[in-house]
Image 1 (cartoon, rainbow, N blue to C red):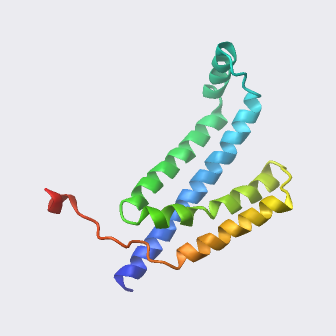
Image 2: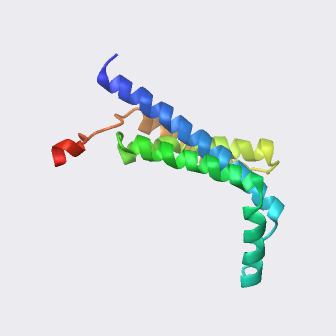
Length: 143
């Protein structure tokens, strides 16, 4: 297996990990904040919502997954182009939309689904390109 193939595979694995962590984190955050209720944009309302949020195990689990997303994102950006990673991760929008329907029982209009399909088409186009178009400068070489 060539160097470019290995780079593509490890990049796609990390993008998949990013998407899973982001989607699970976002779903948990939505669930946790739904249990907190509508946040009133006043000093007292924000304070009350903050106390409820920091005492919610669901929100802490969401934070754990979103931290996982950040670590995966930082890692993959260390070796692949930003212009490859971020659009590739956008297929998560399709998964989060489907998850919102299945787990949160949201109604998604045809117009939204068409938008999601358009995003997926763009992700397929980006996925056909090289993950890195520039050479990575190592810290040793820079010193």
